[in-house]
Length: 248
Image (cartoon, rainbow, N blue to C red; front, side):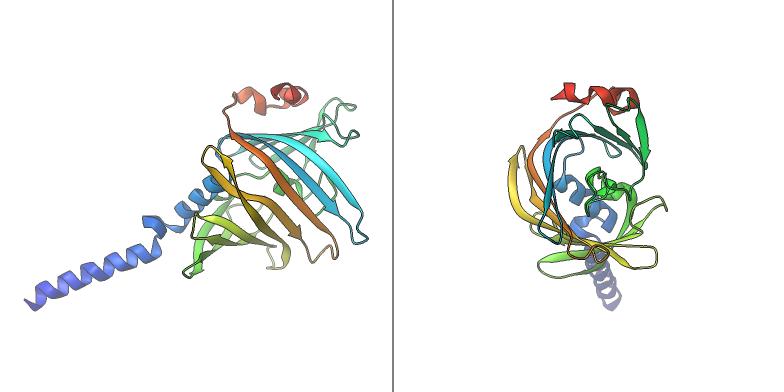
């Protein structure tokens, strides 16, 4: 009898450990994949505004049309201001390019550069799924949220480590802290104003970022529309960068 009770107890404890370690019956990496899907569909088109704010209050605004396919292809078209109109960006995995009509050819970019000159860098604006770039583990959790620790899979990723706060209700991202390889805080992103975009897409409509490296500066991204949409592979090629405006 004692042996049978011991076996049942061991099975029960093992089940509890499994459920504790694996959020919703999944491990931390699977949880991060679900967070990615709640943040954005795997393939979509979206309209966004980025506002860069300087310490003296001066602002610059940019409006983008962006598209994404799968987990590692994304492209972006500048709609405003007029001086930037019809510029385009393309990201395939870790590779990025900027197309300027007056130049007539794609120019290589890096993830830490910023096409707007603000706190958001190219990696933030042309973001891929976090689960593509990072390995996740659960640092801690309470009744309201998970805190995930994300470690970069390769050295080409913009941030060596990310600390991610995720609300358990809806698995919605609340905050991100981005760190260098030496564990220096590079920037903080706060996700605000939960919005139903339709089609089952419910996510924060506003992302605000600040950085201790740029004191007094901040950048705000406002997402006005997100729609699930499929695109042919041709859209995510260098020759197509000059044709992106034809997608709208």
